[in-house]
Length: 160
Image (tube, rainbow, N blue to C red; front, side, top):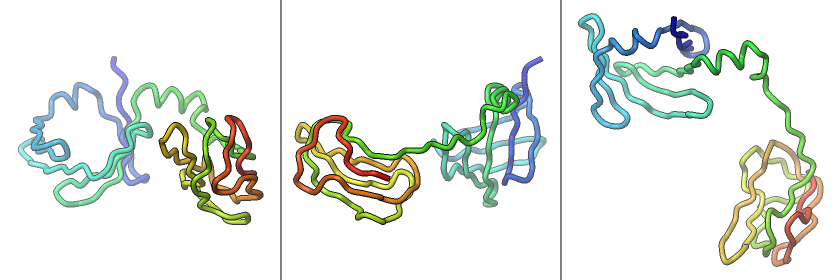
C-alpha cells in the first residue's frame, strides 16, 4: 500500500491523503499559480501565493480563504521518525573571504546585530560584486577589514 502524504494546515490541523485520492481529483490549471478543483460536485478556486519547496511549505487561498500548508511525503515522514528533523544550531564564529578580492562595502559596524541572510559586506572578485550574507543570526564582534582592503581567500573578515 502506498504511503500517504501528511498535509498540515495552519499548524493546527493535519490529515493523511493517499496518492490515488489526489489522482482522482478533477484539477484544471488556469495558470502557473491558479487551479480549479472539482470534488464531489463542489468547485474550489486555488491560488498559490508563495511556495517554499525545500521546506515543503506553501501559502494559498481556497475560494479566497488563506491557508498555510505543509506537505510531508514518505521521505519527510521517515526523517521525522528517525529524529533527524530537529533544528540544528550552527555556531559560526567568523566570516571568511570565499575568494580573493576587494572589500567594496561593509554594511555593519562592531556591535550591530544581524539576521540570517542579511548582506554583511560586498566583496569584488573578478569584476563581479559578491554579497557575503550572514549564515545565522548574530552580532558583529570585530571587523578585521575596511572598505578598499584587498583580501585573500580564507582571510577572516569579521568575527561574530
